[in-house]
Image 1: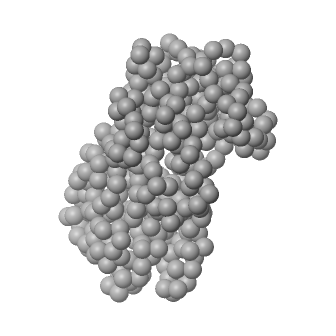
Image 2: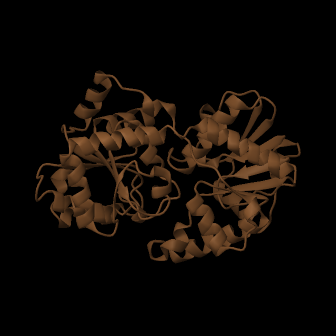
Length: 377
């Protein structure tokens, strides 16, 4: 097979889609010795993308100095130029990490993560939402195969769109093996000193965006402080559209000394945060998967999370759940884990057991099998 990939998500910080596609490609390079991969990207800004591409003889990479928006415009409006043109060869199948169907003569695969734009329309820009829905609906109809990262997202798709269920395949994400590794005391102390971290703190990992429900988490911290006055909350992740609202809420509740916004960090440093924290809190309103949950569980960290969306499917009994719309319930569950050592250990044990079910080699093998099944149809 000649398989094409749109790797433009690599141009962004390694969160979400970028993590998924990077690890999928690396794992495919390890398990597949038969097929050829053609990777496409376009940008004026990042000319150093090649260091992120797997060193694999069967992967051919083309990075063209064309603005991403220009390429998207031509592909959306005109369906031109065909991706095959950039590689001077026909592609049997092309996989896009977004709702944008790539123009090609071969089979077309897209990955759908969630339907946040439909579930929480008040949290998104109206025009952006309309554009997203238009692209998504068109791509769902044109795609030969659709990958979803949870049964939850598959059900959302099949409930809301007229789709042939046979072309929708659930393939779970994996977990980097590095999160299982115990880190040295020097590495841990370096992070503790750099960010002035206390011996006990709560950790959240994810983008600062409305669906992550950080305003309710901050409300919960205020309630927690009625009993545990010196508990720190550390937020690790890129600053997105909810950043100003988070700042305003922190000021409103006078919690400035007790909330640390670290921003985006690379994986090695992220691992130290998981290892140093006391409790991982994940208050998200909607997740198609929730990769940080697995990272925390593999890092011997007890997890407290929202009882919603794909979170319960992925985590199962390996965390303590709360109502994400109720800061008091959130605070109560966090306090329970902070104070109960036996509960902490039970959650850690169940978390490690559940996290061991996920790895990127399995993700890659199931994806490759899906490609083959599509070409046989």
